[in-house]
Image 1 (cartoon, rainbow over the protein chains, first blue to last red):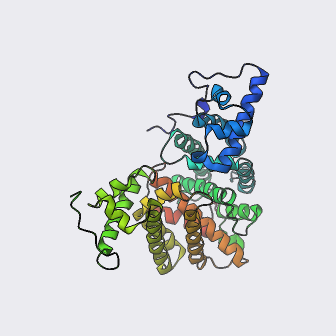
Image 2: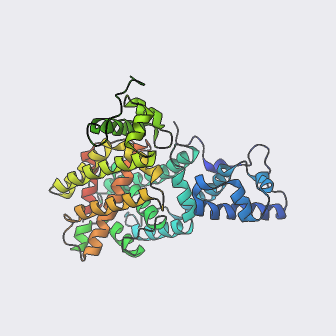
Image 3: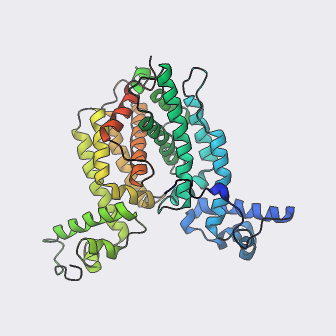
Length: 216
Length: 191
């Protein structure tokens, strides 16, 4: 199964649905999307209905169905925007010294996560059972993994990272380190008495010279 | 054989093995299909029992999940408690979690924000972080030590979830443990 089988970036109006032609219908569609974020955030994906979304937007459900085939279609559209932003804003590039710029990347990731908490909550909810949204999630994380692997391999080649650091496994761990703490912290509200800055510091140590080295 | 399971036994005495058979079947079924797509009838059948037998032991599918999660939590804490250092704790985490991969997969579907299942997970997460924190000496405060341990717990849990769901390949537990322990002790870079 290809992780890129169906990207949400491929969203286009479903069969029989129209792209908004006028600025008025554009506004109506935007209202439906904004309402969907609100409803998904409150009720979750499984608890939400198209009727809830239409009511929240103040339109008839027939109007909402003009633009979207179903709630999955709405979420597909929302995810397309989120993925673009995530990849644009949350990449963790290597700085001039070849080291990952961790602290800033963590703070940026947490900020984007917080801004889109309702969508992340919904996304996690539809990861299982496996769906097109799982494929989109895997594809996004695969992109991050590949970038991290490249940075680690470059570091090994330059001698800034020791040869015994396994690029693949370490990249998996870094992806995990970003993802779950952000999810639990923001969507579940489990902050563990740490500030965002402290979380960023801990991760910068883990991806710097070690937790204990920096602390001691 | 389905339909010919043993007659109902008093839950107070001889039915522990029936319960265990159901839990084992649930673990396998959840591992393969996740929570939502696993039907109680299939779990009972996998255990060679009927749905009726299932309901003599568990009030609901949620209740059944909670029992599985408790078994996982007990096994995990027992192993982490017995480990002499972080490296062996990391490895034990991966090994035990793979044994309970059905629970891990189901947990991603069940323990949604605001549910009782989420609270169970939070309690286990804190308890495990406390066990890891024992081996994280030398940080400036207990708050930071525990917070860091929680992040390590979350990192492991996420890695395990990704492999249990088939999103990343399964790797040697010792290699994963070594890679994470290295980050804790020495980080990524050469000094």
